[in-house]
Image (tube, rainbow, N blue to C red; front, top):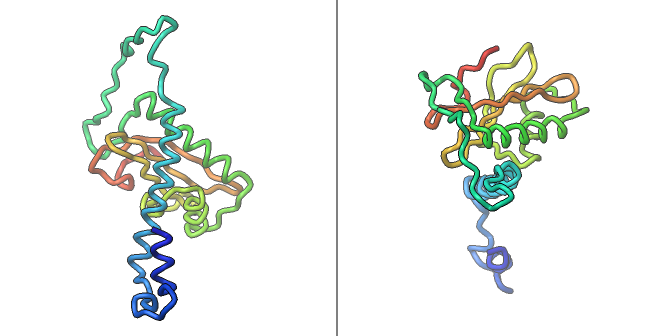
Length: 181
């Protein structure tokens, strides 16, 4: 695709109306958003692989599921969903990754928070601004893929961030989930 794009932009040795036409902002944004989402999926896939439970014992027999099944559906869809152990592991890994990346970083405003998060391969479309906490910028990350429920709240501190993992029901915006203050 890049070769074809380069050939079109250079006009293959001759000027062309197509080569001279500027790309529309929405087309560039779409490609950029798609690339950011692809990088996020790669990162998320790695974290899911690291958190997959060992499903067999030494004999190769399947380990029976736990006695405490998780019912992730809350009575009120705006209440946080209880994450299953694998989801919690993935959420915790995202949280640790962010805490480490922001250590020693002063985050003055939402723009700085957004810039740092996008540099860490979290697409802007998954980052949602919520009201500040005691004057500190705060966002929620929608990390849900497929049928999982993973979300994170990220709040700037003096030199870093605090994170809170939570689950969000499908069909409910992460900004609408009612977390305890």
